[in-house]
Image 1: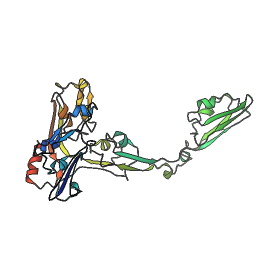
Image 2: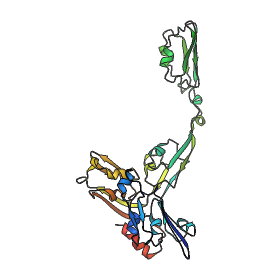
Image 3: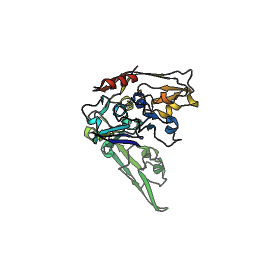
Image 4: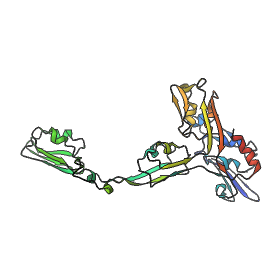
Length: 329
């Protein structure tokens, strides 16, 4: 972590949070004093070099805050008199966000598994199995011959035969585990098992909808979220809503791409948008946030990035608008 602090009419502080940084280079592109430089992004991403993605020249940095205002990953934190500029009215604000409608969410955990930044946590409470699967089961000790077929065949592990001696044994059935699949009854060679599944006969057995409800909570860590869109794409009920920092296009020149022998773009992409398909790099625009990290490391310069719109609002300074214009094609 790199930090700069100066006191004057105001106390200004700039801190680089390397754990959030992707080495995309956006801050270096717009720095008016050229005080920001990215390090060896690819070796750092691959864990070959232990150092920060970003170097800050403390002697030339003007502490203007432009880099912190523009960073879409909030990897730069700029404060004035102890207050983060993101909370100050006069500074720009990103119009990017991720929202998940809990009223729509069915707690399937698809988003949690897909999120490349582990920003989503789903805590769910499953219904009681006993309320969903009901029936009756019994063993006739007169017919049972202790063959143990039922114990071996039970897919739920609900049957256990406890044996004290060759002639003394007991068949125990755990009805909390039993799913009344009737496998034991069908395989018993002496018809010693009687079983019936009540919940299989839907015309005679109505399940209370409240007994099938999956309850829970979903937590979104906004500090980790990068608005990539994986959760929105994979959600079966369209509960998440994503807006990205940039709008535009990205493409790869597959003629020049080294693909499997390189995969630099795959290693640095914070969104898991880059992959190797048929031996060549492929970037899925659905999950790309157009940060440009892949263009920084591609040795063949075969990735084309075109940003058409920047969803940053409340930019009041003309000099800042001019600097930000360099990010848009």
